[in-house]
Each structure stands twice: as C-alpha cells, then as structure tokens.
Amino acid sequence: MLTVEGLRSRYGRIEVLHGIDLDVASGEIVTVIGANGAGKTTLLKCLSGIQPVSAGSIVFRGEAMTTVPAHRRVQRGLAQTPEGRQIFTNLTVEENLRLGAYLFADDKVDRDMQDAFAMFPILKEKRNLAAGGLSGGQQQMLAIARALMARPSCLLLDEPSMGLAPILVAQIFDVVRSMKALGVTVLLVEQNAFGALSVADRGYVMETGRITMSGPAAGLIADERIRAAYLGI
Image 1 (spheres, rainbow, N blue to C red):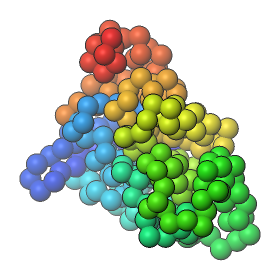
Image 2 (spheres, rainbow, N blue to C red):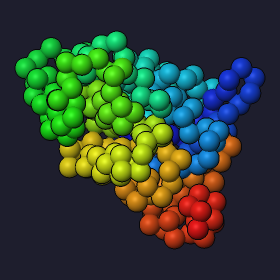
Image 3 (cartoon, rainbow, N blue to C red):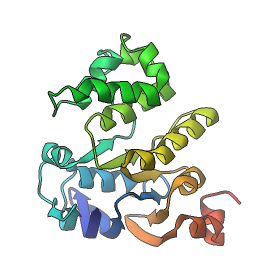
Image 4 (spheres, helix red, strand yellow):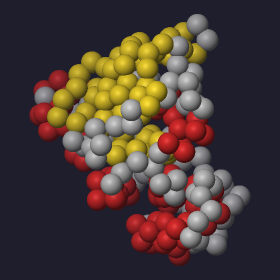
C-alpha cells in the first residue's frame, strides 16, 4: 500500500532524514520506534505532505505522492493523527468530527460519526461540549476519530500514547489493534516501543534520521539490542 524509497528531508541546510526506505502492506500495522529526535515525526509529515521532501519517493496505492499536496493525499486515502492531537479546542466534539469528514457530503457521514461514538463512547457523551475541555486521553480519542472520519485506507498515527496515563495508553493501543477489523492499514510512530511492537505486525527502528533495524515485531521485541535500548530490559 505504501512504499518509501531513499526519502530525504531537511530543515534549512540541515538534513534530518537520510535516505529512509520502508514499506507497509495493505492490512498491516507497522510501527516506527525510536528515541525523541530520531526523525519519526518528520517522516510522517513527509508522508502526509506537510514537510517537503528533498530526495526520494513516496508511492501510495501505486500512485506517486512525493509532490502531491497534503489535502490531495487525504482525498487518496492517507490521513494523519498528528503529534500533540491538534484538535480544534474552541469547537465541539461533534464539530471536530464533522471537520474530519470535510471531503464528504453524503448520508454516510452520520453513520461514520455513530461508528466513532461506538469506538469511543465518551465522545458521544461529550459531543456538544468544547473539545478543549476534554482530558488528554479523550482529546487523543477525538484526534483518532476525526482522522477516521476521512475514511482513510491508511492511517498515520504520531505518538498516540504521549502523555497519557498507563490505563489510557492500553486503551489507545487496543484501538490501534482494532484498526485491522475496520480494514484500515496503520503506520504507527511511537516512543513507547513495547506498546507499539505489541500491536504491530512489523517494525522499524529509527535513529538520527536513519532506519537501523527492521523485522517482524515479535523478533524486535526479543532482540537484546532493542530490549536494552528501548524496553529497559
């Protein structure tokens, strides 16, 4: 579904991605783990079209995406839940969700919203409240639900567990795991290496703008280098 080859990106004269290669097959959950500053968020921004690419290629569902504007990528089925949630705090929960469905004006929007409420019942309870009044965990649920309202075939998830209490982290990873049943392919970026690898099919390890390891998630969890560097074992 998604193929990245030789991807490079820079901020000014400083290159931060140094030739990234990765692929995501349809129906997979693939994670990219790494320390803060490894370039994970920049990678997702390049994929969603927010950050310019200086070299390399992005192919999504057989179509070259490297120079396609961000809003066109959403139309093609590539949506992102950004780091820090970035919800519209002054709008209600329901208004945030409807903005996620801005591409559509059909009857299915209301059904999509009911699906979102079924996934996150607390959002239904608070649908008419300002999103800024939600807790951090509820805001993350809203950010994910808003992205799903765009009916993506591939969802880019950037640090969904960041800043959440452990019980909410477990709930968010359960939601990520459930994406397969919805037919949504997931590329998950996380500092929480154990949680991410526990729900993923495959993983990539990113260090200072480079992919240094990759393989089946179970194999990475068992790798002594990963356990020592990222799992605290």
